[in-house]
Image (cartoon, rainbow, N blue to C red):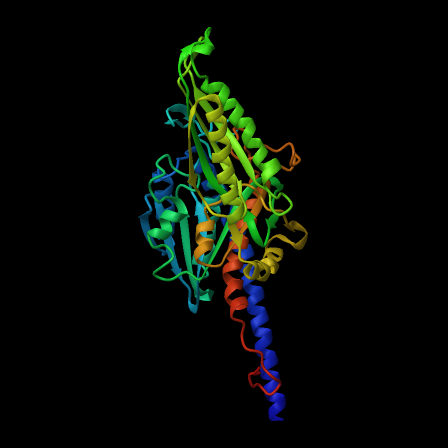
Length: 448
């Protein structure tokens, strides 16, 4: 009789736990739906008022005021304009970090929407518009919505949530300072309390709206900045033999760099990219200038590959310059490391993605050659970074404008999936990381 009573109590407890879990999912669904209009409104406001890296003063104030209104402990001016909110749950558990980046890009918007950006600035000595051409406005809005939902459920949260609103993911003009995720880590964002795990998302304009894409292991490339200065000898354009032409030399270097990926990199192991993004030199049609400057980007997916590509760039550029009689200076500035999803963590959280978006709307994708400074968090703690679809349903992935372009556009109907996913990760991770001990029918804990 005693055994039957014990078994009945255990079955009852299991049913209560199942009901509790079901109730949490239902509450997240309802609260996410309730906050969705505000998420969209926030996103549109941020889109209309974009700010470049380390200049996100307006954005940061809106974020900080919102977090405070929810009763969340707030710290401002972290690594310039960063905002950190701490929400302590009602139950013991891990410290979980949720991150959104806040900065826009020096891009002049062409999309005809009511909340189009008309902000103008001078960037790198050029007049340009400013646009959220990578979707960071949606990241901020989604995390603000997530904070709203979780603050209303804090008594049911096992652990502590750190909401990290990060500046300057796209970089800053002054490379001699710690900025973005690196700057926030150096400012102590992973401490007090110490973070156990980090989650981040990125919207994608060429992934079907509402779909979640992920990859265990390396998910995005390391990025480095390439600067090449070529010094020749200035002369009249009609008498090129009296000078040394750095423009022709620059052209030869551009073509020479193309052989690195095609002939030096083991592409069967991992892809790489070397791109020259701009060449500056000269002022008049009939003057061969003294100097040409080239800038570009390097993308790699491994330490040895990174070293090889850097070495080959310097060797090719300098040898071509020497052959032409030019002085060539190559400066490579190391940027973000490879974004690597912790494999165990990623596999553990895949069912949460199914739960949030539906199994048919979750897919594993190949490694992307874009870069993300979320990688700095992942160097310190296990991290999981995934992509959220925002593609216009009327277009295919080949028709949708890519990121960092004037025609970049997002369908807003998938933002709610981002809110639900973040919330479900916060509730599911503690239980999955430290599951309750299994019991026997007699109510005793099993031992290994």
